[in-house]
Length: 69
Image (cartoon, rainbow, N blue to C red; front, side, top):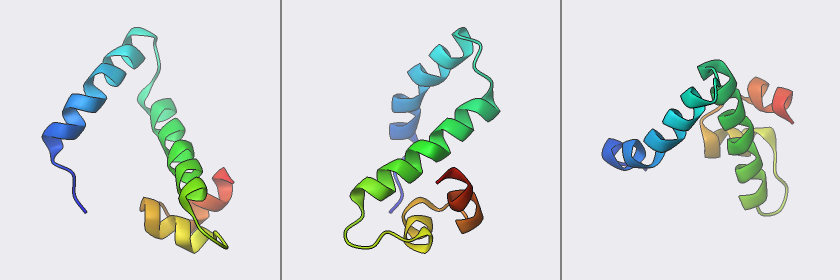
């Protein structure tokens, strides 16, 4: 499922402005988003939640998921 870029722009623009104002660098923000994606996928999971299942839900590589968990 693809979300229209305009929706993401509208939602993320204030976050990006705040991050820049607070001196948060992009790599730090990206790392935080990866962690939040994994947390959300684990919370959404039903039954056994494997790294492979989280990978499918988030688009992150299993190696990255294992590192974040």
